[in-house]
Image (cartoon, rainbow, N blue to C red; front, side, top):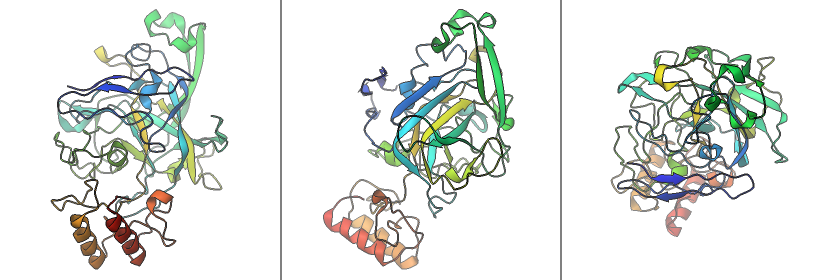
Length: 399
């Protein structure tokens, strides 16, 4: 059983979530709970035709804001996802402040910067077969905050994966039942959508997971319950903040059902450095360094029986947690936080410091700035980290 949530979205109105907790369920967070942690504004929602994108249950764009609400890899929770409709249908979201381009670290070896959450799942409980209605991700700068990209859009193309192919589709009202025509096109007899086809999954779900898996795409990777660090359907990190858990990226190149999630919530992480110019196929010059706008669009085409059109769903977008905090272990010594910097953290830190293990204690860069100040880890466990940790330990708070 999942919480009932009213994600009431009206342009110009503060976006909030009101929830009724169910047995064993976390209270759904307000959309402003983690300022800067999750996407906070809808810039544009332009879905393609479809039985879901035209349904009031799945066409509320505010569902893509804030933290996701998740089920298990076998059974996703669809109570907080928005459908993008057929090929080229899209949603554009904005962040409060730029999503930073993070360097690779031991805990984030691919240098991932953001994560898109959808409702992919294991087909029949088989971790080798995924129901993935994949979408293409684009990013852009919006330094002046007006909702328009500064310098154009860049497409995410993961290393070693097929480059998304640009396409245009014309949709005519006469070709669809009235109930499938999107609300934004109510006065139109036809319209055109430009988007991309993801060649790896162009035929639609389900897909057989093999090498290469569909890295760099949205709505391709199943998610796990808040606090389920090993994807077994059981919460073993109770009380963890959504921005911490869903800010820990899965490994987008791993097919191992255990190591892929890496103690986080799943979803599809990507790196800013994967962005390419859609025309030239080259990386932007100079490098983007960050982004404020993200656009996700349906990138597969077709219909699947009772499930109808292939349609990407989005339930949230998170920036990646910049690095581990001083709160590195719980009372049982496991290397994840319990919300308090205590003796267990001291033992874990001193052990890591002695061994030079940066996975759980590299908290600041050479300038002494903590991850929360935008400095982040520098890949070395050194005296700066010791000072940062001891300060947090004495003050009894997590960084």
